[in-house]
Image 1 (cartoon, chains in turn green, purple):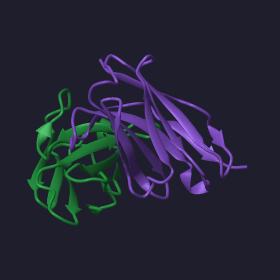
Image 2: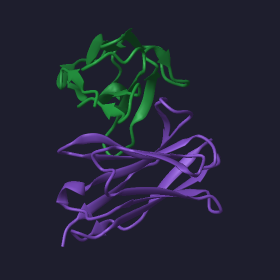
Image 3: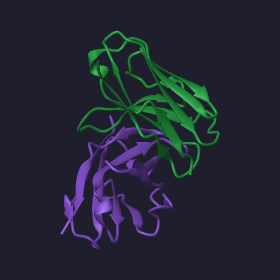
Image 4: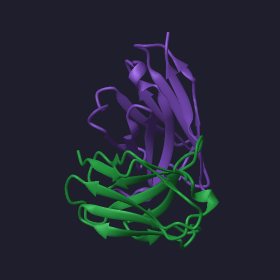
Length: 107
Length: 118
């Protein structure tokens, strides 16, 4: 199985901050990585697919980059509605596997 | 707009079989890939398996011996059966869609909590 390691596991930030979350794969997964946002009691919501493509309807302050084994999700200017937990998902090989999550909290 | 809705018992006894159904609206279960995913505090998000074209299945090897995903095309539903459950199977179970093999999930159900307890 491909292991997905996210860092940090949690962070504290203020509105307006630039936030960067990293996901590392245990083996190369090309660009087959997506990012999700999850709020308490809700299903994950896709933000980015195939590493850098912004899901329709998602604000442009979200961006993704990377290829191979290292990927980043960046929020350019954190908004109040962005406090949530973020997950990466590799969909390059089966079984599909998720990262452990990064909780973005209020500083 | 595609919508998915999970349904089924919220409480299952140890050693019994967990059964859930996902009802799809706004799209046909005959097309695309339809998965089950679960989320527990201990193991995070875990992909369980998918069904495609109402017949082709692919399961997570960690669960393969206990899992069956099957379609009901007349009702535009697909179902999950997980046998011989233990407390470790307690989780929120989601159904989700992906548009192709090796694609990520674009639509998700709201999730349903299943607790395994006597």
